[in-house]
Length: 255
Length: 279
Image (cartoon, rainbow over all chains, first blue to last red; front, side, top):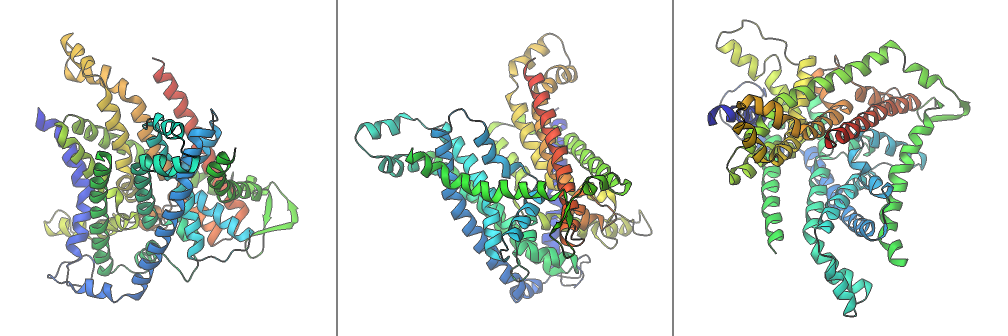
């Protein structure tokens, strides 16, 4: 009986992980065809390490993700606290704050392209950073609002009753109690920004491609085993980050 | 009052300028004519042509293709995801988290890489064809890549976790006493499933379907990489209007059509959710 009900789960895992395993195995292939196996080699990793375009893409992506995360975290935290305290029963403002997260990415992408063209902004890393902040802000706000719903409001009241001012209460009470939500929102934004392709594709300058844009052109203009090596490294990084994030969130919950 | 301004001001201004204004621009663009080198030719006045063009069979065909592909993907995700979510909910407590993380893990890896993996698997000299010819099932490689099923498969692979998560949380919440009551009253497991579990988890089914359908419908990367230009979805059209054809007004009309479908869908979901909740 048990075994019968678990079968679909094993099928799902087989479906989800077969492509991953194939990519990892093929990344150690000596042949310069990405498909046919001809012996073990780490040559493609060496090729990758010398690929300036990939390295520059990676640097660009990290700059964008770090900037967008910082900006989203500040704006999103303030907005979440503001919505909890001052939005009253308005349903419009909370809806507006989640809109970027539910909007199809291509619509946001062309909207921002239209906006940048209207204000004659040059496209570059800054335009991607500002664009990623739109959805990052939405995710931080959503996660922090969930946290606020679970926090005891009497702590802030006690702080004010004891004579602490607005700013002191915010810094000493509100921020620390919301910290797990803020960290989770920031991690989420960072990961999403690292991976984001569609919006970056429309809003990046031609001279500053982010890593997903570099990967896209690699795939489109010739499939080489170098992509397999890059894929394996990225898989390793995101798996580590997800598992670390799980640990961190459990740790901060415990505090 | 000042606290209110400091807290709400920055975030709301940001969204007003970089979300609402861009969306308003797209809506505004729909009634203008295209500029000769992209952009908008405001001096040429307004027109209804852009809306008329969308009724061209060429474009309605793309829209219905997109809806069909997204719907098939959603249905397959439900058929694969429901039994998987059900199986997870029957695992012992501490294994459930592990099982869920394993479902979500691929979702956190680069979307392009996940799509690319299917090129390696499906291409004519790819892993699947080599394996099949290797064991002698087929003589010549099958055409797997650059087909509509390949696009559906790629979308299914990309968004399956978004189906499993809401289904799991819905199945988890079903009161086990209801299942016991049903069994005590003599219902076989299959009957209990159809009469108790499934109706109680329908809101989760709806959420999962929306989570898969919405990103599938607007996707242009999977149809491009796995459909190889043979399968065109509405996202590809929008991308082309903005980046290659440089017809921003018509691209905006297509984007609004996409949004209109999604708004209708969300309204239907809210309506169905209320109906289900009222039972």
